[in-house]
Length: 248
Length: 248
Figure 1 (cartoon, rainbow over the protein chains, first blue to last red):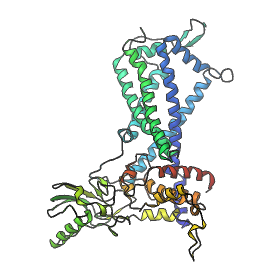
Figure 2 (figure 1 turned 180 degrees about the horizontal axis):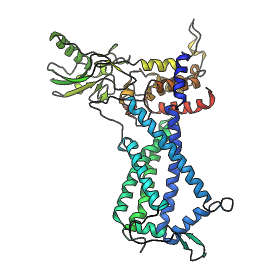
Figure 3 (figure 1 turned 90 degrees about the vertical axis):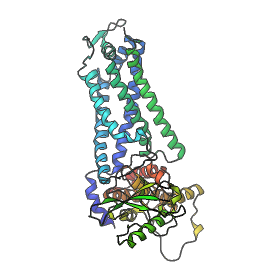
Figure 4 (figure 1 turned 180 degrees about the vertical axis):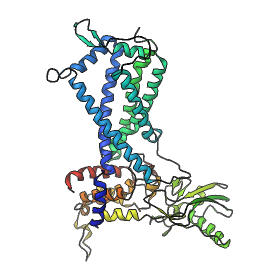
């Protein structure tokens, strides 16, 4: 019997088992969960005004100094996230294709019993999130384009310390004064909520951490809680800006 | 009862399949689903037509031979096997769509009959324990703690019918594998092969062309033996541990 498996071993060693792919996706996914929680926390600082928000951006850039250079931590973390993105997306695609190949003839009638909207939307929702991430990075990190009016300096002099620091505040405020930008972000946050709602639970199960009903329930609740916290926490600043509670 | 049946017909493994509609007027609520098909087949034979091929054996819900997707659900709307499903679960005048298990790892042989030997090859890969043959050992010579014995028994109720694969959006065989890994891994007799078992079974599973699990839970909902979803967590945990213990 071993010989039978040795044949398959050849074929599979060039591409990992489905379980190996899924572990890597789960680990990368949990890194993203940690990241979006931190990102959301930083965004909420905008509710306290320009100084709090720009100060947070500045502190991210000097984190780890003097051991790390200016923006050292930021770039290390960006590289880590980029690597995780390659793993997460790069393994989701072959798994998606394996699933399609595993059922090349579809059912005429198929009823789902346990599937949720969130679990059904994992793949296309993930594609939507990827498109959003590209847009989001172009808007606030790479091009820093303003869909509203006006150009803003990249840096500003801190009124208390007289240091030159990062100045993301006016671009963020100006962007979210445009209703359709807020709409895009609201839709993206809905997609993120759905992805997290199933993804957190799924990661727990994939890593083999849901072996008892109590643990399974805990991971499921964690999925719901993180989805709610992250999506609401992210959408509060844009809404606050749109309705004039923050900014001018 | 008057029933309209929409049945998948396929003359052979490589023949094209199509749906065919049949009327059945003399159905009683006490008939099992298979008895209803028996009546239909008698009518077809009387008319000189080819009867519908389907698998069945014990007709007691314990062997796992029968299985078809009824109105989009493996084994139909009740949590039981097709042979234990009765026509009282349907209403007079209903249209019922009947299809074979759809998974490329379970190729259709004819009509509603699929080849499930892929499961046998997964079992051959690791679903066994090594014991001395000859006289049976005294049953109480190896103590098994009650919780482990219960969990192993619950997983051992898997009859290998394949409903989990049929229900899975990815056509994955993970609930089946999880049941076997949990059943044998919980018992002292299953320990010698515990780590090689899970690796060999996962490799065989992938090589057979099953998809990967996305933790949606359709399998556990469709399982006539109500194997819980946490056996997949056990499978994942054992695989993770096995990767570090077993070297290729």
